[in-house]
Image (cartoon, rainbow, N blue to C red; front, side):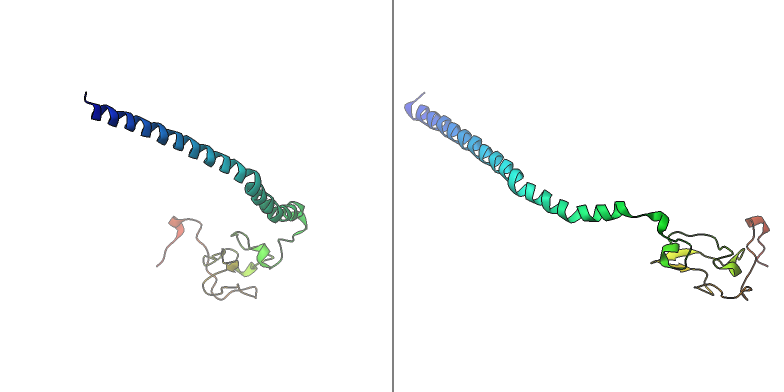
Length: 138
């Protein structure tokens, strides 16, 4: 092999060694930085999040759900759909038009009377068929 080729290969090997050392040093610097980040800033972020959410969690855990009256006509009473009862919308019991679903915290009783009928006998009341076989639209 001529002198020029040998010199080029030695230079190339030297360059590879230098690049390898640089990569190892950069990896060490990144590892040290990540560890320092976690020990200082990461701990500060954890503390801030704890300071924000700890009071919320304490309030949630202190709630006594037995004291909340779910039988009133407030939005708290309409957390899920349900059938009418003698206390709430008695004119709707057994009516085929009763919808009873909650939208945006508001109960939709039916299409004709969205808030329900105030009296005992709703003029739009129709019997709710017990099954499809009993239903006759004509």
